[in-house]
Amino acid sequence: MRFMVLVKATADSEAGVMPTPEELTAMGAFNEELVKAGILLAGEGLHPSSNAVRVKFSGEGTTVVDGPFAETKELLAGFWILELPSWDEVVAWVRRVPNVTGAESELEIRQIFSDEDFAYAGEEVVAKEKELRARTENRG
Image 1 (spheres, rainbow, N blue to C red):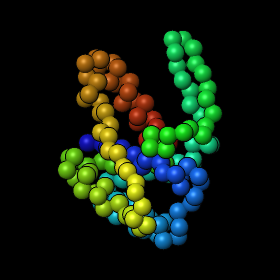
Image 2: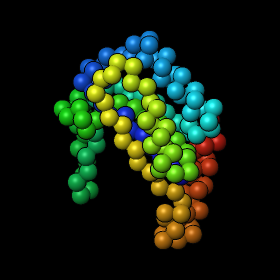
Image 3: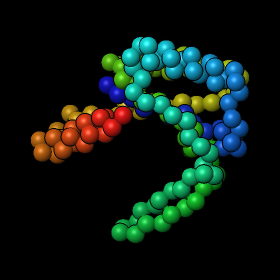
Image 4: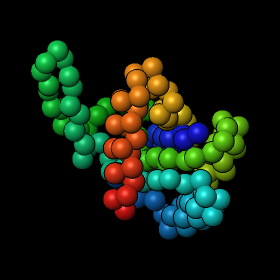
């Protein structure tokens, strides 16, 4: 199963405060453990929402809203995509994420849909999705 671990933004991350060298070192060591375990598919930090745009849809229309966005507890500051066989294992890994400063923070884990989840849409739709995924995975 694939999981996305969402790193919730904080007042500091929204203010553009960069991680300390100690935080970067600890996070780099954790990321290295994920790579060695063969479970890290992707992971990135995100710039503050002041450098973001939201595109809102209503009917056939769209509206573009520039950041920053007010509610930091609803914003993201980064993510990992992990592949593990169970929820128990992903939760165990996420509990190991370093919290060097001890500051309040929150991570959210969401399971990513797989091809099997869309089987109801028919073989052609699933085959097209697999083809697109294969093309994007081979870009690296």
